[in-house]
Structure formats: C-alpha cells, structure tokens
Figure 1: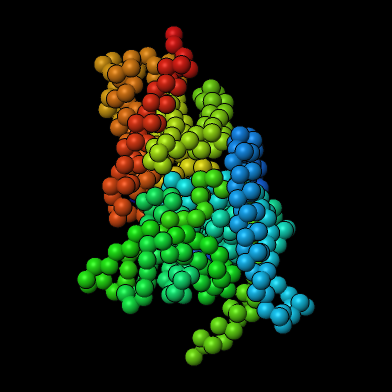
Figure 2: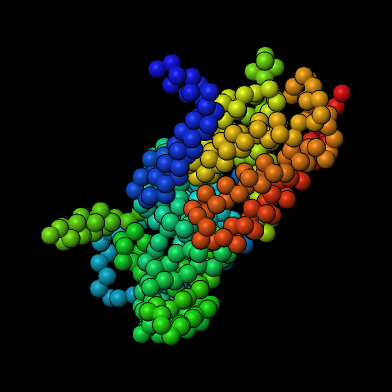
Length: 272
Length: 169
C-alpha cells in the first residue's frame, strides 16, 4: 500500500496532467453535441457583462457602418412591401395570429475566424428567448440559439462546423442542407443537392422552412460556384453569404408559435 | 512565496481581461490570433511547482473557454503548456542554474535565451489549441496556417511586452 502511495506521489505531476486533460477532452466532446448545451458559456451574467463593456466601445466606432446597414435593410423591406402590396390574397384572415414573431437583440460578442464560432446576444430567457430559436441578421440568417441565461443568450453561428440548416434554391424549390466548411467567413456550402436538380451560378438560396425553426424564404446567400463530377450524387455548391458576419451588430431572434405543435405532431407521426 | 500569492491572482485577472476585452478581437486576415494570455503560464514565477502550475493553467483555460463558448479547448492547451514548462526550463537552464531571484529572472539571461524559452512552448500550445478546436486533422493546412501565423503574432507581442515591461536589476 505504501508503495502505491509512493508511486502516486512520485508521479503526481503526470497523473494530474492525465486527469486534467481527460476532463478537458470530455468537455470538448460533450459541448459539441447540440443537445447537451448545459456547459457554462458566455451567456453567464458576469462573462456577458465584461464582453458588453468592451463591445460598447467598439460599437461607438462603427456607428456609421450600423446606420448604412439599417438604411439598406429598410430599402430592401420597402421593395418587398411594394412587391407584396400588389398581390396580397383577398381572403386573408386578419384574425389569424402571425406564426412568427421577432425579438431584436444587440450582438455582445462575435467571432468569425474560429472553426466553431458563437455569437453572444443581449436578450435572454427574461425576454422570451429559448434554446433552439432561429436568429437572423439584417441581410440573412445568422444561426440558432444554443443556450440562454436570464438576460443573455449564446447563438451557434452559421459559421460553425456543428450547425446545419435546411435551405432551398428559391428559383426551383430544390432543397439541401447548408453547412460551413471552415475556409472563408463569407462562403458556405450547400450540401445534398441531388444531381437531377437544376442550379445556376447566381441563384438565390433561402431557408426552406422544413424545420419549423426558420420561417421559409429568409435570405441565406447567392450561389457562386457549382461543381458536379461524373461520379458525384450531389452538387458541390459554394454559396456567398448575404449576411456579412464580421459586421453583425444587431440581430432578430425569431419566435415560432407553431414550432412546439409541429414538433409534437412529428413525434406522434414518427412513433412506430 | 507570499509574493506569488499576490502575483498570481493579479496576473490571472490582468491576462484574462486583456485577452477577452482586447486581444480576442484582433484577428489578422482571419488567420493570425493573438494568444498572449500564454504569458500567464510562461512568465509565472519560476519556483512554482508543475502541479500548481497545471491547476493554474486549468483554471485560466476554463475561464477563457467561458468567454469563447469552447469548453475545454483553451484549458487542454494551457494544461499541456503548464505541464511542459518546468521540464523545459530545467532543460535549457544556463550554466550555474538560475539565480534565486525568482519571478524577475526571465529577463536576466538575454534575448536569445528568452526566445529559446518562449518559442517552442508557444508553438506546442498553439498547435494543441488549434487542432483541438478544429476537432482533428481533416483541415490540416488551414489549421496549420492558423498555428503558424498566430505563433508569429503572439511571439512578437509577448517579446515586446517583455522588453517594455520586464523588470531589470
């Protein structure tokens, strides 16, 4: 027994090293699984407050940029209203609740150069934000809420290996999945688009609305490169993101009224 | 020892706040990160034992992970850095050993010694950090670019920091 203790004491450095690295490894693996988001994160009150303090200074220098972005978004929305104004269906039920609601939030922290990027925003469970909600920027979708605290939330950015969103080519309605490949923060890949579908460089990619989290037809980006090798089942599509993630200052969290109903229906259907 | 008791918590907070509020936001060309927080372990007093140093590294790494939502990534790299540091210090000890001055003696042996001390440790730290973040070697060259350019960036910043603030006797 004494020998054992002696051995442990003699090698305490390497043993502690092994234990600590094991703990780190377990944390790394677990935190990357979407369901197990309960690790401490930057939505923690103290961390988020510190990040807010430094972001505020930065925001001050980027006011001009923020103004320009908002003006552009205004213009885009006005054009949309003009377009829609002419063909709103006559029998719209005005009492039907809007299936999606938007909560505006300020970006407190944002990275784009890592392989797994996250965005911290200043709205939390107190404002009705829940994990799983969709987040969109002024020009296109941004990601999904991963974890919330009382007044902050962490959003898993589209620029993250672990994030998948269902998207469609707006011209044809063919759909696939978008996932970042980690190369450039303004390009994303559209995966699983079958080879029989038609796709051109310049096509617009939008959310498909299949997952009940994102409303359909939100802008994602524009197709820039299309490749199809002889043996491939799917296209290799590179999409230019319409949202510039490095300039993200304000985002909207999308609250979907129907998400819980659709989810429970799906669960019933999928039960054997 | 009493010196360390004050020095460690203070430098913990200073390095952490500096990293989170300033350095983390500076990324050159989407590849070069400034991870100067490694200085917390690298320039901790020489007499600290490996066990204590690893616990310090673990605590610091996890605190930083909290801000980056990267549970365990920074911690794994800082723990390794802390584990290797004292062995490396011993290995490159100048003839006659280090003087008993403790914390301040990093600047006593000249720039070449400082470079041989800092550079390999920093490279190991960056290597582990970026490949753990990438989750493997499948993006080998992109990740390697990040390792290399961040290494140059951090090394420059740390040496400048040492040149301007390092106390001399």
